[in-house]
Length: 275
Image 1 (tube, rainbow, N blue to C red):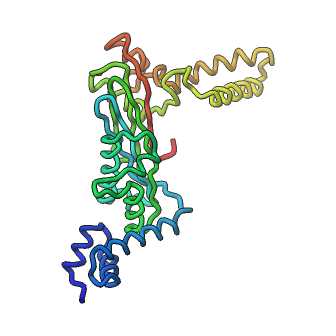
Image 2: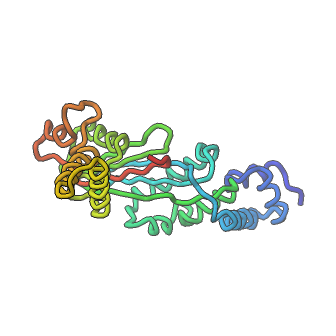
Image 3: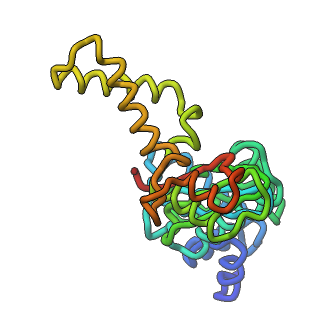
């Protein structure tokens, strides 16, 4: 039975695959749509296995918030051309919507979760890999919980942030300002006591080395390093950072201008571009 253009277009609508891939799959499957779909999916598995050692440095990063929960999802690929494809962006949106609905506890749980057709997120990513011929993977899934949350997607879908607050009904512009602060200034933690120990150790050593190079006495190095650490906190912890819209105040002061007890519980930030 000859493969018609109508057959090809129907399979293309079902699978999202290219015209020639659909034509070849239908010819091999003798116009059986189910078999043709299986052929296309097996091609995706083969492509994914073949390109597993490739670097997926491009992609689409999206975020959303709903009440007490907010999440960031990134699907990665190899080229910006594929990252901007409408079907690729739609897949990322579908995965984010699933995350918002099911609130999985981990990236692995999200990968195993079924989308609308009953097939898992991982299977859909593999299928898309076969269609585009590029390596694809779930680059990240991060979430925050709080009395209220906010999300921010930087134009271009390469960077997104989510922030959780300790109070409900935070004024939207204020919450958005904090999410944009996280995007722009890339803090390492909300507050000083949450900075990982290995970073503290590293910064102290860097400060001591600089002081030695400047000829400072050995007995003063610890004090100098502690002073440098305070500067590091001011530049790299969210609440102590200068507010990007008003350098006269920091983020903590900005939040307290609305409510003296308002603060940030947590944030997550993901970008495809190295900072």
